[in-house]
Image 1 (cartoon, helix red, strand yellow):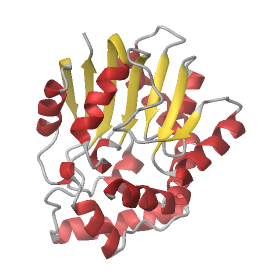
Image 2 (image 1 turned 60 degrees about the vertical axis):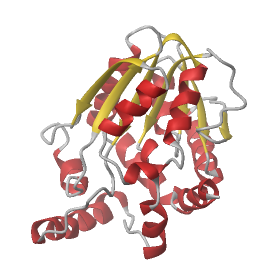
Image 3 (image 1 turned 180 degrees about the vertical axis):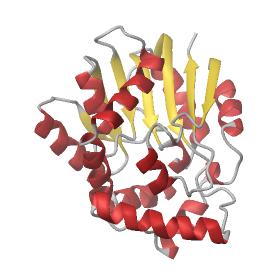
Image 4 (image 1 turned 90 degrees about the horizontal axis):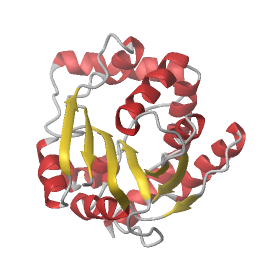
Length: 251
């Protein structure tokens, strides 16, 4: 039931998030930075089969295609898959894309992907432990799971400084992305019930990954320093989150 509600939430947000990635694509510096981060997990070998879980409007799948890889895009939200498919066509790539459950990859065979990637997805999952187990299953031996995420909504700071920063960020987002960033009280209530919103991360992720039999788990906190993307930091840095990147291997 929660997956259905989460899917509806992201479908309603698909237009807004599409504006986010279009803004990112207009910045060569942003694109270069994300490709470098992906290469930390993928290395330089081209032609890898990569499952892009929670693809949203298709940002990672487009980058992976540009890097010479073979992505498959998956999202629980029909609205996001519609946006992603449109973007793939616009950028000239034929990326397989379908609506599916990140924690129930029934269409994917065991040991079939060189890598699984996701950005800001795990915190939205109703069952992160089951998802990690599924991602382990579909990875080839030696394959890599690449996670970019954060401790979103966890004990959010509401100091005067943070409130003022939020007001500034709202203005900058409106000017640069032509969208209004806000969540309804109903949305906040839905998201606050997610399991990984109520635990300290990435510690909870490390424990869940080990339980899923991942080994060689490498965690990098604050993987995008403020100086690397100052405008992005002004827009989103107000969030009291500990952003992190995880590379985990299937041995």
